[in-house]
Image 1 (cartoon, rainbow, N blue to C red):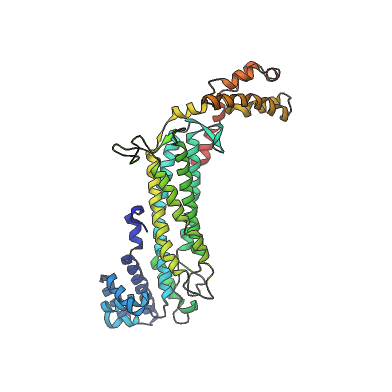
Image 2 (tube, rainbow, N blue to C red):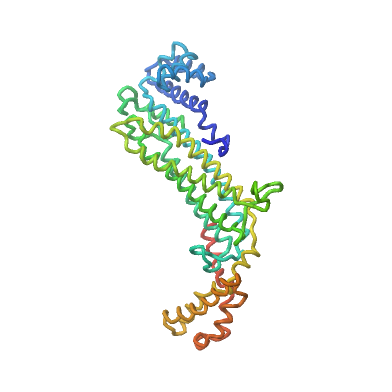
Length: 441
């Protein structure tokens, strides 16, 4: 993980200290279950909790042991024995390393998802607030980045809200799928440990039970989890790209907040660059980098191998830490986004009313003209306006209206009042309330 793009709350989940504490809790809860079964003395289970629970595990000491034994779990158990003493022989009874490693990863991913959901909720709240603020702020919609028909800036944000609401549901589902426990011993057959131990540990750690662990939790769960993260990252980029385009000098309908004393360029003092949304685009790529390796982790040899292990040591913290940071950065961008309604209206009007072309196409067909001829009549006038815009940078107010009023093929089918009436922009916004009700109610 890169500390520049990390929040402390998330990085702590992936710290060595947190990992070893979870390892201990799994082992200690397992000892309680074994004591109830009479496999180990109850006094030993209590002693393990008393001494291990107060222990300050030394990462340096565990690393030192691991350099000798070449096994991380054994290194931890050896260090734990230094605190517990003779009763340490009862720790890890019937367990295998993957029981500890996989269950711990489940705990960490579940906790990480809880933080991601907090970030998602902040983004959703910001989108809802700004969408309602600009519910009726008219702006031109674009397809292929070219002026199409009017919409509102609120509808743009409502669309993103709906997308992030779906993303939140995916995260909830992903958390449920990944939050599973496996304490089934070597090869996952429970030959040396009773299934009730797994049930007890799962309950205490807030996890469900993996039905068939084959010594490792099946990695299709992890693949689905990281895929869900990847989709959320793409949604972040979706908003970021929209804002970046709107901040272009030629458009400038919205821009990131530019604080007092902020500088945009080391060379050009006039620059106000969309650095936060550009950064979000890059962070989204980093999160999506985890998706393919997670998919490739699914096919393991027979009951297990460890080809997935090194991958997950990287993508687990990297993807969750980066996405967590990106969500809060995005929320801040939306909360502080500067919106320019006047510029939106100016940009829309630069093409002289061309955004009403479909209304005329439909009106002519309803007046008895074939669709092909209707299209031809509207387009020949529209292209003249387009050329005015191309050469002058502004077609001029009413350019499209004036041409249509002079076109006898059009006026023979539509009255002047009909033609003028079709330049009412409110026509395009008559179902805004319906859209908002679908998204927010």
